[in-house]
Each structure stands twice: as C-alpha cells, then as structure tokens.
Image (cartoon, rainbow, N blue to C red; front, top):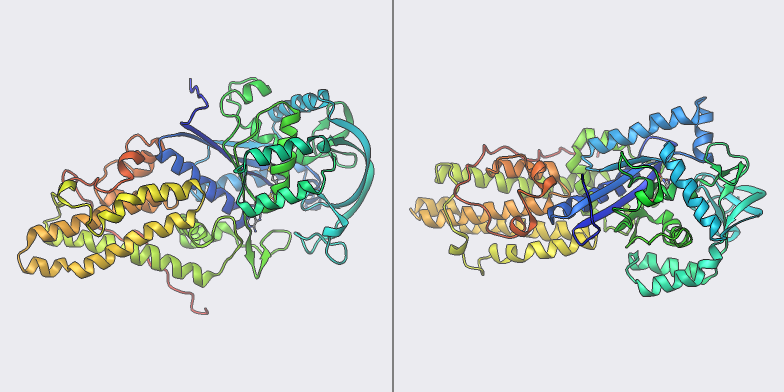
Length: 533
Ligand code: MSP
C-alpha cells in the first residue's frame, strides 16, 4: 500500500483543469510543461511527488461548442479530453493523476462539499444581474469591459446580460479572513505582482458570487435544488481534491484529503488568479479544509501582444511544433526564453536560434567533440582522475561545486530561465576552457596527464549540466547520461531518483573511471531556418 505522510518529503502540485471546448493549444501546454519540470525536480531531490492534471468539462462554453458541432457534450468532452492525454504523452509529461470533472466520483465529492458549505450557512438564493463572458465563464464588472461590451481577455467576444435567480456563495463573509491569510502568509500568492493585484482586488470589497445557473443543463444538479446546475467553477476547483482519491477509495472528502491534501502548489495562468487566490481559499475555509501552500500565476504566451487562445484564433499547434522540433526543444524554449510570471511572445526564428545556440552548439558540440577526443587521445576510456586530484579553484570545478545549490534555488522559486542560464554558463565556460587548454596540442607535446585532466573536467561539467537540466530536457539529458556510460535509462533513474539522487549527482565530481563511455552521437541536430524567414 502506497501510504503517504504529509511531510517534508512529499510534494503535490496541480495544473489547471483544462476546458475541453477545443484541443489543447500551446498555452495549455505551457502550464503543464512548467508543472512537469517542477515535479521532476522534486523527484531529483528524493521527494515523493504527485502531479495532478485533467480536464474541466462542464458549463455553458462546452455545452455550446458541442451543440454547434451537433455533438452531445459528453461525447465531445470524451474526444477532447483524449487530445490532452495524448499531448501530455508527446510532451513527456509525467503526471500521476488525470481528473475529468464529469466523472461520477467527482459528483459525489462536489455534493459532499456543497453540503458542508450549506451547513456553514454560506449559500443563499438571490437575484443575479450582470455581464457574463461565456469564454471566461465569469461575470465581469461593467468598468472592466472594452468598447462594444467586449471581454478584456476574449477581445472578439461580446459579454452577455444575465438576470436570473441563482444560489450565491457568501464570499463577503471571508473578507477579513482572506486578508489575514495574505498578511500572515506572504508567499501564498506569487509572483509579487500577482499578489498585489489580489490584495487590491480584495481591499476593494468582496461581493458574493453566484454558484448556480438555471439555463445550463451541462453540469451537476445543485444538491438542494435540482432545477439549478452548479456553476462550472464551483465544481472544477474541487477536481483538485477528487483527483487525490486512490482508485480503491470510497469517494468521500475524508478519503480524498487524507494523504496529499493540502497540495503544495497550484500552478495557473494569470487569468484565473481570482478563482484560485480568492474564491477557492474562501470555499475551503467554508468547507473546513486546509488551504494549499502556494498559488503561482504565470503570464500569457502572446502573439503580437495578444493572449494566444482558441477564442482569438491566434494559437500555435503544440502537436505540430513537437512534430517539427521534438519535445525537449519545445519544453526548453518556453522555460528558458520566458521569465516565468511574465508574458512572452513566440517567434519562430528566435525559437530556432536559441535551440541551435544552446542545445546544438553549446551543449551538444561540447559533448560530441570531447567524447571524440577521449576516443582519440585516451583510447575511448574515461580518464582515471579522482575528483580530489582537481583543486576546488579549477575554473570548471569552482563553478560546478556551487551550481547545484544555485539551480535548486531557481527551480524552487520557479525561475526556470535562471536555472537554464546558470547551467548554460558552465557549458559556455567549458567550451572556452577546452579551446584555451587545447588538449590536441597537449597531446602532441606528450602531456597525457594534462590531456586527461582537461577532458575529465569537461565531461564532468557536461554531466552536471545534463543532470540539472533534466527536468526541462529529459530525453536529451538521458542521451547524454547514456553516452557518458550510465547504464540504465536515465529517465527511469530520475523517476525513482534512487539511482541518481540530487545529493550525489547534483554536485561536481561524479564521473568515475569505471564507467564505459558510449558511442558519441549528436544529441540535438541543428535546425535549419525556414527559407522564407
Ligand atoms: N477550466 C479553467 C481552469 C479550471 S482549474 C480548476 C480554465 N481552463 S483553460 O483551458 O481556459 O485555461 C487553462 C490554463 O491555460 C490557464 O492557466 C490559462 O492561463 C492557460 N492559458 C490559456 N491560454 C494561455 C496563453 N496564451 N498563455 C499562457 N497560458 C494560457 O481556465
């Protein structure tokens, strides 16, 4: 039995549960790639880690899309949901749970939670009046709207007027408790710009929000009044909890929250910050459940400054992108190139240039030429150098000794670009080092020991770089480890993190002469720029 105790040694995180109104686009892939890098890094640290993802399948947006295609919402959701599963496979996402909000077990969890909130006296009937954006599944304030009553996020969509009897959740009751939460746990909402946004919003005064609809069939019935369906967000957020049920568990809140709740991190985009940092904690307080540790809201992938999305029709197809460039390339570009938390534009020439510079040239060539030199100058055997023979002020070792810690801090702060840059620096210094040391001329001068020291130091630096980048480029790292003579598939090793724990592999000086080097093969092929660019 996989018993888990919530201790320092576990880490659970969630991606948003994606709407199934369409197949996934690059924006959905972005959050998931980042989440996967986090979970893989946690596994390197030796923690038991759980990545939760899934699909959000109820509500008017899905209902309307399915109807417009002459499909039932259920069969349409079934098909779209599979699109996410297969993209995650293509992108090498190591998720542990995939929750679909239409699952019967989820309905029971939602029902039980609703009853708790009802008992807390936080649900009442009232008149809802306001502007609704179906694409956001959210009411908007009049002052937020663009000209022509258009949504500020889905700028080509007009909001719709709603005036109906709904059930409301008493959010206003939690104003003081929420403010106390933000004050006592400054890290609860990250990054700081997002935290400030939420603080301002809450300071402006919280209004109760409606949690039921009367003209939408596609949702769970409100337990106390089946003429209403539950608002899609009320049900969707609880998907995070349902996902924690073990297959053999009875679907109760007690079982679902016994092992992994509260989760350590909700990773989301900035458009759904209010739901996660205001509504959700208040719902949890009302339902008597502990709050997650942290909510991180990343920025948007944009095209010409506008959020990429299906509603605007300006997206990039992740399946085509992975097909053309491979999964590691896509993962690397988005995590290295865009500061996590800020918006970032996609540009194909830049994409190609970065991959060529970092992965093909700096990292790939370094490994390849060094392995070839080992073949030529050391009969293909890894030089027998003891780590202690190299002094700690050696130009590569001196960087390598501190790199693990630095990169660990970057991953923990979700600063993936900083992690990449720090590793790349070691790779660049290694390239410079080999050029300056010129082992080919040392060899000619008969300085075998010096040759071996140089080659060892460079290979060890490549190894460390591959290890520290493995949460981002797992396949390339795995190939590098194999060429360096680590027998079992590295991907498997880091998954269990038994064979390659951070405490050993995260520092400099791991390669040993016992290792039998593999055949040098390019780990990343240079991409040619499309002709018309
Ligand atoms: N179903 C809700 C989430 C419910 S969570 C209990 C939802 N789904 S979504 O499919 O519309 O969006 C999911 C995530 O994808 C959000 O975090 C959103 O920010 C992210 N992205 C969608 N388009 C994006 C970009 N263009 N760029 C970056 N991320 C964006 O909201």
